[in-house]
Image 1 (cartoon, rainbow, N blue to C red):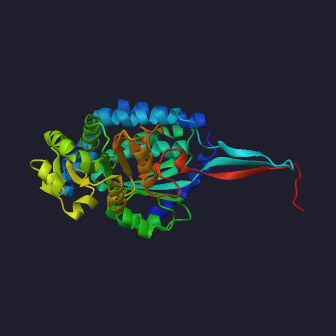
Image 2 (tube, one colour; image 1 turned 90 degrees about the horizontal axis):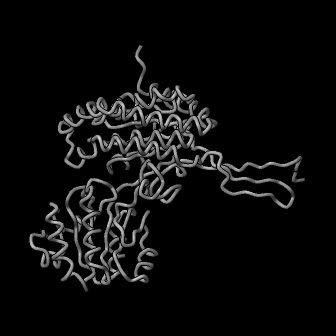
Image 3 (tube, rainbow, N blue to C red; image 1 turned 180 degrees about the vertical axis):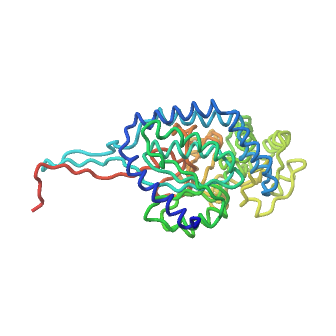
Length: 420
């Protein structure tokens, strides 16, 4: 009799829980050896991995993927090399497990230490982006967690090829074979089964479209680490260096428009709009950007289309930029509070006081001053690979690296101490 879907999910979760118990005591050197060996294997087998990815890319239109989604799905040699390099960077990072975060000796001689420990088992769901298979496995194993990977059907061939390498290397370095598991079915009902298994799964991380994340948040019986949308803003203040502002806006919008930290809205102070917008608009349009703006923007930028209110609340993930002229910094902050998603927002200014006010009032996981929104990234912030960017406030916020995949315990050591 074939195994039922619920039994399959239960078996995977049970094995992950057992692996997590073993993994929590594995020495750092063994984890690092696995990371480095896996990175080398990825490079040695690059041709076969990219051939597997080509199958997924060829089938992508049949799954209804748009250009932005196909871009996220595509695994180029450069992106594969970056994934391998991410594993090496994680190997070089300090191990957060066993790290003493706080501690000391009480007046009565009792030693109290706050020590980093793994979360346990992470259920990681993601769409497209097969490089995330590598990032998630690397971060989870280094932080002592077992991970259950559930990629989308659109990346099935690529994810399987990547997982085969990562899994094959585990026992070679004395790591539990079930520390990194890939869910072997595309059945959407499997997700629902896993989300009920809070006795085995300690954290669920969904990384994909808003509908996926909302479903997981609604059904999960364990904590969820998430971000719904990346509606990121760049505000150009009245004192901004206009050349610097133009370069930041172009980088934030054009460099990789399908990324969650790409700018979706440009806000321009009315005092400099007449000077800045015609130049910036022309430069953006030369890069293929469609501008959807307020009435002032349409007046100042030839070819700009009128924006609707919905445009300012949309994560375009494409070469589309919503633009609005605002009266001052307070109006920019109010716009971000209304339309933003708490992901990443930037100010371009030469006024230190304005920068401080913007940073204090904008409630996002990262606030950039005179820098592109694209810097809200684990690697760029020195965290190594990341498992996602959280717009939650508990228990982690922003790029989630090794430390964000751990918790802590108190270790209390006495010498026959009693309270009586």
